[in-house]
Length: 287
Ligand SMILES: C[S@@+](CC[C@H](N)C(=O)[O-])C[C@H]1O[C@@H](n2cnc3c(N)ncnc32)[C@H](O)[C@@H]1O
Image (cartoon, rainbow, N blue to C red; front, side, top):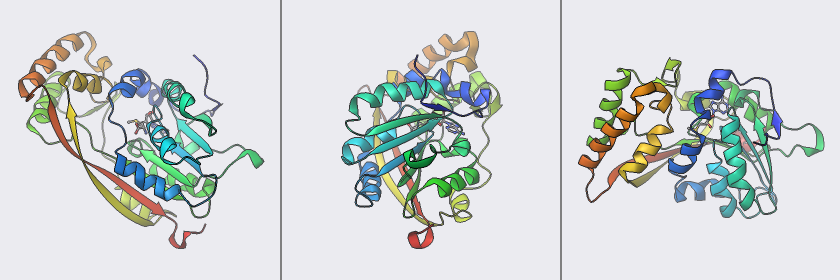
């Protein structure tokens, strides 16, 4: 295994291990960023500068940079930060072949501890993205970091498309109930803890930050799942990862597969999701 380019002391061990085991399944089974969302983000970058820079916080396996690289051919540099080394390794493997002339720095750090390289080597980001990751972070601290490091007319995008835990369809409800049957009624967040809802909404965090000029974009997405891919997705989650089930994991997966097959129509399951992007700027567009 190679290492990230930069590592900060900071990510707590439990933060790191929560996502470590999931990296390969995550990369394989998580839905990508919808095309309309990529277009919106690309518009936020295009025309701002000849050689725009992206900072992706909680990059995971690099899905956001991967989607943006072809959409923004002039993209000059990507800073990709995550608490999980395994996720960063997966991101490196996925991004390296498609970088072209764009440079990449992988930063092993909690988003609130992120810092750019000092001096001339530090390109100020024009877009800071948190995709399906902001709820894991100290929101106000992360927005303050973004304000410190981003270019004067930069944008921050906080986005996500829900999860199969929260989605309301007969098959997701049945799957959730099965998980609860095995793991108890509370939504889990890794082996250590129950999931707790964010204290404030993302909108409230943004309103209280330097990024208070916010536009919300809601993009309807219809996803079609094969039952075996739902099983792979579930394996990559913090609410039903294999480590939570111990020796009962094989039994859970067998029951889940039977349940999903029973709900599938023509071999597939439908998720009608909404991918939401909060695109935020500093009022007046200046620091
Ligand atoms: C659900 S994944 C999202 C990955 C990617 N952004 C995507 O949309 O596919 C959440 C990611 O956030 C990372 N993460 C969690 N807490 C973090 C923190 N405080 N700072 C940086 N990354 C964090 C996890 O390691 C994981 O890779």
